[in-house]
Amino acid sequence: MLTETIEGFKLSLQQEHLWSLHQNYAAQNYRVQCAILIEGNLELDLFKTALENIVARHEIFRTNFRFIPEIIFPVQTIAEQIKFLKESYDFSDCTPQQQAIEVENLFEKIKYLPVDFEQGPLFKSYLITLSAQSYILIVSTSAMLADAKTLQNLVRELSDSYSACLQQNNNSSETLQYIDFAEWQNEILTAAETEIGRDYWH
Image (cartoon, rainbow, N blue to C red):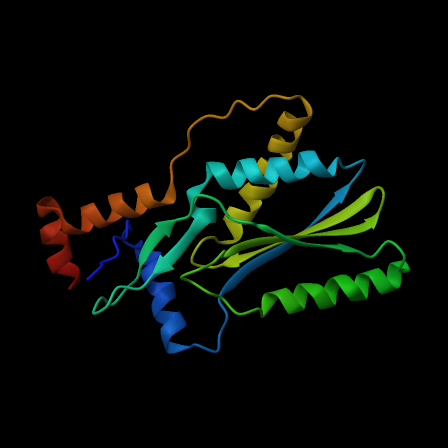
């Protein structure tokens, strides 16, 4: 009998809370989403490379959640590669009023797409062309992976990554991964020196 070996990591406390909400309120789609206006002469191939570099650098954007029988919470698993730029849309032939309606409708449609926690990808982006000098990037992901601050950091890092691609500078420093934080948090909760505090709050 063949058995599957899963390399997984414990959830953080925040992820455990969100997972419980998902189970108790299955109809509620806990998602983090934003639309980013990009103006100027965008080199699409370099822009996609800039996005790929960010996803490659941050494991959380490649994270799925695998279920293990008789375990309350799933484990985090890291995919090697994902197709995160899901689709491209061209609304350049529409009037500005029509463009606004189309973008809003697409934003709402993406917000309610079903989530596959095991297969993913949970991090998705959609590029909309408004004109040769104007684009919108919609970024959508499960709240298990990101919050509003994450998306703010993503916008800043995307700008830096695109500038680096334009300058053909692909040097990037190592970054702290979310699973490292989750592991550290779980170690603290089980450490002998925190037992008194845990007993107090229980």
